[in-house]
Amino acid sequence: MTFSRKTLAFLCTLFLSTLVLAQKTTPKEAFLEKWENSKNYLIAIAEAMPEEAYDFKPSERQMTFQEQLMHIKGNMDWLSTTYFTDKEFKRNATDPPNTKADAIQLLKEAFSNTLAIIERTEDTSLEETVDFFAGPKSKLQILNLLQDHVTHHRGQLIVYLNLKEIEPPRYSGW
Image (tube, rainbow, N blue to C red; front, top):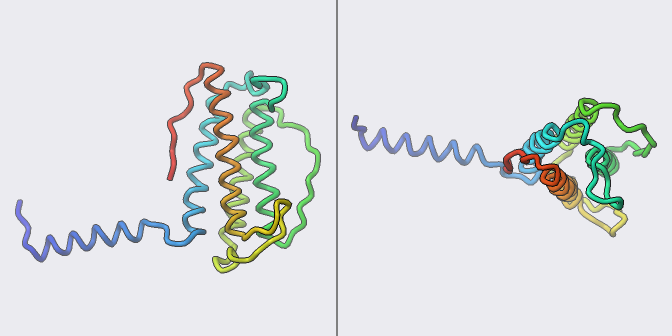
């Protein structure tokens, strides 16, 4: 099969246009894409651990697998509500989930709630400075912290799986 130069030029232009359109060009767009992938990866990790091992922790000073998951959820709730809404965040003591399925559902809801909050955030507001316990930070830095915190604890959960001789799900990045 042969193509004319005009057809090849058109196909090349179409291909390159598709690549450019597929790229996320703002920090918020990049975050939202990464956030969805991060959710899927963490849920896969949560699914990989058997329910009877949700109380596993490598040492006394560490959190259990389930406590790690709920810590991640709580941080998402706190950062997204406090720094991207007008609502006051109230950290309430809650009972731990009764089942693995309950824990996973709570994680999914936290990811979805954070996604919805960030989707409603104006791109220009990411330049705003907010008061943070570690000093003034831009909202863009808070977005980075949201993802970094999930990544940090997800890495710990991968170690938990390995210690239980469970092969972690294959990494999925961007």
